[in-house]
Structure formats: structure tokens, C-alpha cells
Length: 452
Image (cartoon, rainbow, N blue to C red; front, side, top):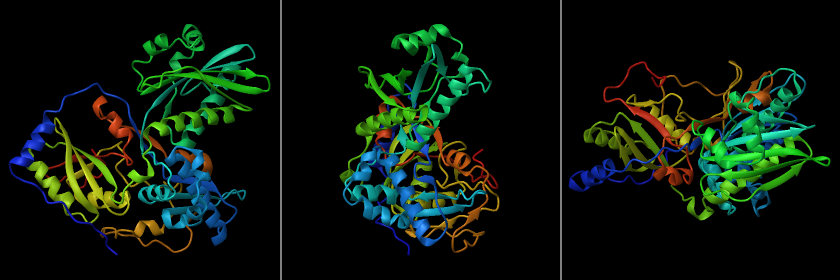
């Protein structure tokens, strides 16, 4: 059934021009490095089999993990009413894929609807942390058996102890960041041999580390020193940036993997405490920002507004900013965000910009023969009719992956820079949905779907 709300009338005349001209005159500010996390609502979990009961357990497990990512806190799983919501996890599915492992290590890959998940969290009075998140540059120094190593983004895979140490910790922090949907960057490997810098990091001399971080994209720096303490690993860190500065915080854990997870958990919960939206602010009509480049005239704005207003899922459209030839619109919509993207994709004048998170957020098949099954949440708004629609089979889709967990989880996540300035940074961090990027083509480009 098609669902749509009331459309806001397109305003022409002097009042509209005043709004647009005011946006054009907005002041420019210094750039920041907000990051959109694509894949927050996609997850892959182990399952024992493909029977309805076994799949139901997998749905609930997957939704629980998504709840932690999107709320920003593990406490969400202790909320009153959460068990009933998890028991009905299938109703929030956009699609799923059953991955049959060679050794019986079967997995279930799922994509949940962002709007449905956010509303479900609000229904149990849980916070909702959006897809636009601060990028943390983690300077991590590890001391083990009298030797110190700097953990970098792509350590050498050689056989030395320091190289093996760096690789172990790099994988641990990458996995922890993936689990929580937190953008974390490690410094380039070019710094790995700088013993003076390593000494400054161990001493947590923020000013010196800040000086060498100027060319590395980040919102916040974390200076972390890790060492053994008794039978445990200990991590202590200080933050720099975004008014998060303060004294050293510390945690302990028995293994590198557990320590990295504990550290990133603390970071995620601190950010979520600051930027997550309260349940009462989620609202019935979700809103998304659409950035259009190549908007060179007020006539273009009128055409764009008319096109979007005419789309079934769109409730209202309003301009929020004009910066050069870039127009930002705030669009309220019904149904799921992926369905809105499908409608926009039908108009060739909206060209998705390559590298930006503007395509539907679903799990990527690892096999060319893999098929995805649509879930109930995919039908809240009827999808637009395409000339080459493929039939989706009933039942579970199966694939034969190689290393489903390692490859599948990575394929479902990407961190995309959000080109906002300091004035818009706080607003971007508090937005619930990813920013969509398109280039406006006055004359439609025929046969070009690659964003070029």
C-alpha cells in the first residue's frame, strides 16, 4: 500500500527569494571532518541453521547488535520492553541473506530499516545516535616486554616482534570500531619509526602530537598508552578536541582484543551521551539532508523542489543552505530511507556522487550467485516500478562464502567524509540520518550511473 503525507506547497515570490538569498550570504567557516557511517543498520551474525526458529534467533541477535551501535550504549539491552522488540526483529528487516559455511559455520547477514530501528529504540525510551559521527584519530603506543611500538593504520606484516605487536593491536582496534560503528583512524605507517614522537606520545604531550596531526583528517585526537599491569593489559588515554579535553581515563582487560573493545566502548558511549537524540525527539516524520551540487540558478532550485515534492515518500522539502553551487535541502519523508533513495534514482537529473553514501544501504553479496530476500520493512512504501525488476524468491537466500565474517562485516561498513564547516558540525552530528549527495544535471546524462 502506498503511504504518503501532506505535501508542503512550493513557495514562489519575494518571500522565497529572501530565504534563498539569505542562505547564499551565509558565512564560510573552517572545515571539519565529520564522518557518515554507512552500514550502521547492517549486521552479520552466526546461526545454527536455517529453520524458522533458528533464523528468529539470528534476527534478534542482529537487531540487538544494531541497537547497541545506534543507541551508542550497551545499556539499551537492559531497557524495559527491549525483549519484546527483539522478539519481533523480523518486522524491521529490509533484507537478509543466509550464508552457508564450509564447516557448518553458517551466518545470517541482515539489513534493518533505519527508520524502523530508530522508532523501535524510541518506543523503549532509548536514545538514538545518528549516522554522522566524529572521527577519532587514535595515537596508540604499546609497551610490551620493555619495547614500545606505535600502532599505525597499515603495519608491516613482517616477522619482527614490533611488527607483530602493531598488527595485532591494529586489528583489535579496527574490529572494535567496526562493532560499535565508531569512526577511528590510526596514524600513517610513516610515523612508525619516529622514536621521539613515540616518547612524546607516551608522555601524552598533546601540543607536540597535535603539531604532527594537522594534515590528518580528524575531529578528536586520543593519545593512548597501553602496557601490562599484573596479568592484565591497561590503557590510559587523554582526548584533545571538541571540548572533550580532560584528565586521563583508563581501563583494563585480559587480552588486546578485549582491551580495544573496552576502550572503544567507552569512547562510543561518551560521544553518544553528547550527540544522541532523546526518544521524544525522534518524531513520526524522519528528515534527511540532501546536498545537491551544480545548482547554479534559482530556476534550478524550483525544478528540484518540484521533483522532490512529487515523490510518493516525500512529506515536505525546505532549503537550509546555499554555498556556491551547492544546495542543501531538508526532506521529511515517510517509509524507509532506502525507498526514498530508489525514487530519487529514477530521475536522471539526480546523479549520485561516487564515493558518497547515497545508494541504498544494504548488505553486499559476496557471491555473484547470492540473492537477498526482502523483509517486511521493505514494503512500508511501495517501491517505484523499474523496467527490469527481478523476482525475489521466497525462503532464505543462500551463498557459499569464503570467510563470511571477516569479508562480510567489512563490506557492510564504510566511513565517508561529510564536507561540512564548523558552523554545521554540531547540527550534522545530531542528525539521525546520513547526508545524501547528488549532482544536479539540468540536461539528464543518458547511460551514466557511476556518479561521474
